[in-house]
Amino acid sequence: MKTRIITICLALISWGAFAQHDHSNMNHNNMMNSNMSDQNKEMSVVNIDNTKAASSIIDNYLALKTALVKDNGDKAASSGGALYDAFDDFNISNQPAEHQKELKNIIVDASEHAEHISENGGDIEHQREHFELLSKDVEDLIVITGADRNMFQIYCPMYNNKEGGMWLSDSREIKNPFYGNKMMKCGNVQKELAVK
Amino acid sequence: MIKILKISGLVIVLGLMIIQFFPPEKDSTEEVPATDFVNNFDVPEKVQHVLRDACYDCHSNNTRYPWYSKVQPVGWYLQNHINKAKEDLNFSEFGNYSDRRQNSKINGIINQVRDDEMPLPAYTLMHRDARLSEEDKKAFIDYMDSIKGY
Image (tube, rainbow over all chains, first blue to last red; front, side, top):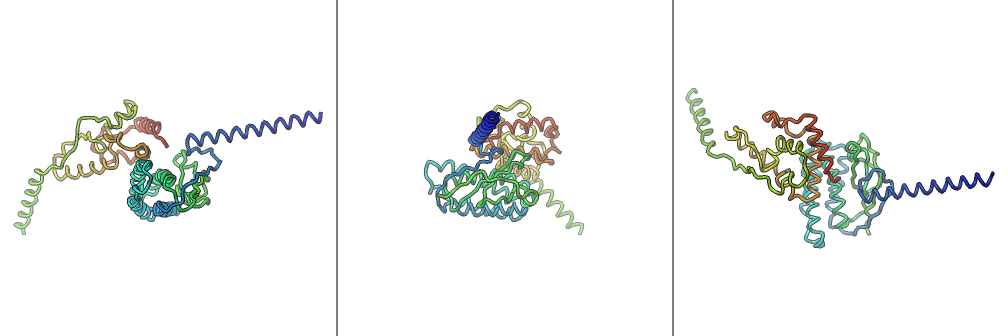
């Protein structure tokens, strides 16, 4: 009787472990399909080059993010303007030839977001809509160019009617730029862009 | 005093008459180019109607100019507005945008229509056919959602 109970327990445990494993695999697949998957609790690490090429873009992006965390639309507008200038000053021709076209596409798109953010100091929700798309641009950019500090991709499943949205930070600490004071702690670190 | 009023009135009328000879440069074609939004996606009829009735006058090269656009300075103002609108989003050139920019624009379109920011109230005031019913709006947003990448 005793052995039978032990056998059943072991069977249950191994089944549980298998199910768990299967589940994490599924999450992993989701992440491969779309890095916006909101079920994903695993953190991935992407190694990027250690360079200063995008420093001014990162500085101004982070200043913009902090302004949105503080619910300060006017400050976000001025940081958006400075970020626009940083994109304008970015020298694509110093980058590897095979990435130049993609970098140009990123900068055209990102500059437009930065410009809209700079023009909408009175409408912080509109600034946040652009900030979400801008964050994807900045991430794709620094994966190509490298960065001078470690960055984290943080995901908030609540944003945009629960479609979710992500932003970048230079810290693991969650301070939500989409909601500011309304939901400061919403988010989980999804990915680390680690400088080599 | 009356003389001054008469002279300034005359100057204004003359000025208005003269500016009628300087219409803005309009760029409107009947042609729907290969780069047009509708030629790059499989757009349902209903959504195409919304695009033509409520969006294309400002956001494409197929503007249907109203009669008062022939009166200056109203025409100047309208053209200036249309040029700015097309800089932000031109459906006639949508196919030339990078995938990334197309995706940003589709996101922007959804947000603007959902929040009733677009079509502009000043525009729907003059264009009754551009007013979107709840049904139009839903069909339009659902479609844009379906082609959105992220």
